[in-house]
View: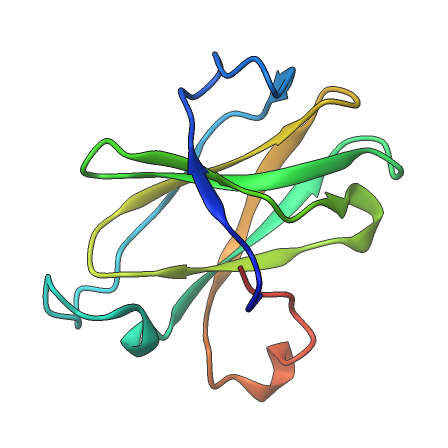
Length: 123
């Protein structure tokens, strides 16, 4: 998504969000240098949100550095899987909601150039 903002949060304790999924670990792209810019990140983790179809959520991540951020983009569970780019370091992903309990499942990995995944929303 081109127009999204990420804000720092305290996982599970941010009062603006009531329900938090467990974190799902993504293995970083070891082919990248440690200081690779975001535009060079090609590895994608595919994640499936779990919950009531109309439940809205925002996606987030915890970097190895300890920074935890959540996006201002809101999706509904019924829209299905989504992707997150992976840099050179491992990262943990989660979703959070104000509507209802949510969960998150690992689906797999893909590459940004994989045309069979061109419809996959990427955050």
